[in-house]
Length: 193
Image (cartoon, rainbow, N blue to C red; front, side):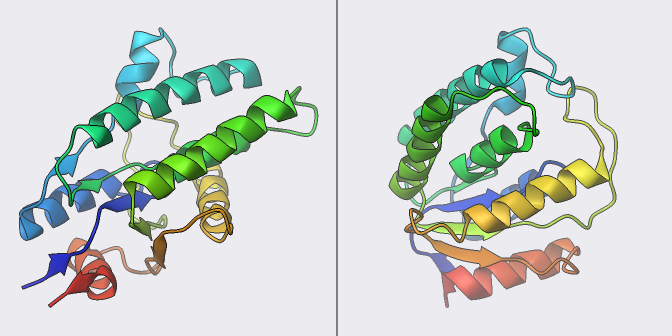
């Protein structure tokens, strides 16, 4: 029997199976699955996550997404598992910056620092879930762009190496796409038998 010490956040790009994996681990370990509300936040703000947005709008949305996530994490019993972390939020914010994007760097730096602090507060363990499973279109979900998904994946991997992060990090192998293999890899890394 596996036992998880501390909260576990699954991080990575969209459409990598984080939610399915989180639900399966939650059920197996009999711990709460804490679903984040990224899509609902976009809907409440009247925005489509698949549409491009300027940086100011992106930062505005990402702060609202973090507010909503922190609220549900704060209200949850520990240990829990979540399908999104502030590391993902930093990656999506950075992913929208191009060479000519106008960015208020002070606001960006404050947001990034806030995300690292939130990650350290709510998560003792992070598992990076890399792309590999087949991409399937779903209404209201972010765009199915394999290159963009890879871009976010690489940003997440880099962010998880940042010294501001104080959590235990595991990167699931890219070729581990079978649900049972993913579960076993994560539990062997974080769990106690």
